[in-house]
Image 1 (spheres, helix red, strand yellow):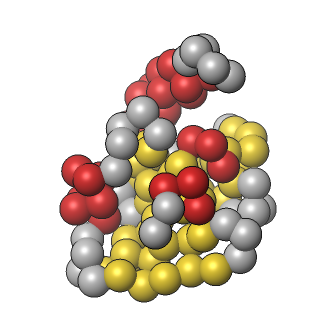
Image 2: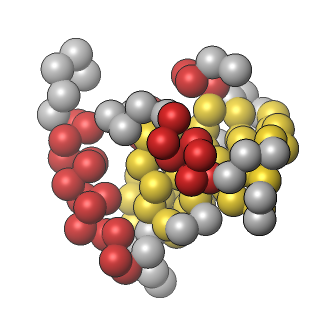
Image 3: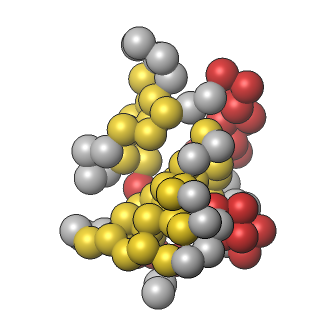
Length: 100
């Protein structure tokens, strides 16, 4: 599975739902923690215990009614309060990287 197709990942017990671009998903028998260790940190971020996102598919960021990342496919991913500062740093780092 190509990294540029992964929009986000969502934990489901000992399984992970992988949302793909354009429209698709897969259920894999690996934990989100395993994916967090394997996927490149410069591209993927875990804003919540149950979610990991591909920064390339992030459309916007909202703090109304709780912090959320809105993905290009319209899905909303929560950002845990304890991860908000890390997310803002990651966003700044991601947006200022060479080649953008």
